[in-house]
Image 1 (spheres, chains in turn orange, blue):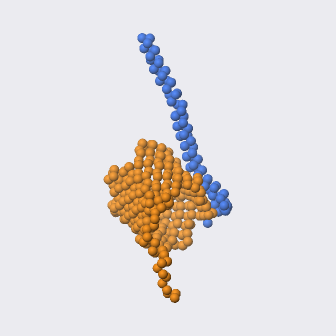
Image 2 (cartoon, rainbow over the protein chains, first blue to last red):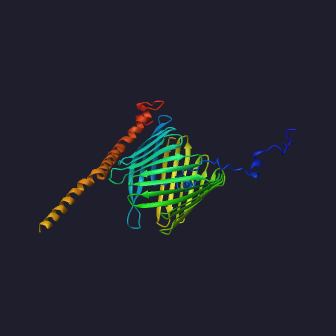
Image 3 (cartoon, chains in turn blue, cyan):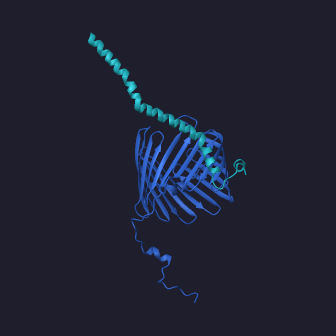
Length: 309
Length: 72
């Protein structure tokens, strides 16, 4: 009797998808923030490539507070007028302090040449969040700062941005169906006297995410990520600027395995790249980064180690 | 001729009074806001990381100074 097949009247979870669920349009999920609309495509296709050696050490003093020390040695590109890329070897030490609390997050990094990069995120109330972001340097007129105020509603999000140089922006995104969300943004840059308008859409299911964005600055971005299995995702994206008629398409994969994460991509500019993060031990990660640009004949290889959570 | 002289002096006096009127509200406001932005930038540049460390050292459970300075 242990092998008796259960009667088909008992509903099993596998039978649910055949019956479409009634959509309650007043109870839609909260959408992704507008600036993260291409999140899956960005995470899979744009890892932080670097050239040279990188060593990061994060020391936690406390559940919420940690310090980080980071050493980077390698050639860095200097913008030049000619078609050739000029690289200058540099070595930097960066000290950082992080404080992470459910209501307040502070993140600060300072380099040896005096450049400070700071991020603050503070929950003013349950739905209202304030974020601030600043990159400060000792050189005059090269510092940037931005404040964001986000309000999260039941199925929408709005954001107001204030930046230096008279930058004001606002964005709004709304869930239209359980899978589709649409949003728009408008911004005005005081210093350059430019204004812009943009629209974005995102459709996601458990297996795939498709996102698109178009802006009046001439930028069109489309992205598609398919989760082939638990461990493998494939992603593709296309960036097109209709003002300058410049198009870049890329296709990549993302393998998230137990001990490592491998991301690789190939580009329409003739650039192939890969990024491997291997977990050697608890808290010890080994990183390899490679970026080969066949068109510009620029080859970048990097290796590094990350210690600490 | 006397009327011409009168006109000239009138022109000069109006030109002279304009800059002092302009300086009252908008210019003073701009100067103050630029001054506060500069001071805020310097304070943030030097004080942000010490502020994070101060808030972190006072959170529970309190870490000790030796943990802050040692490389282990």
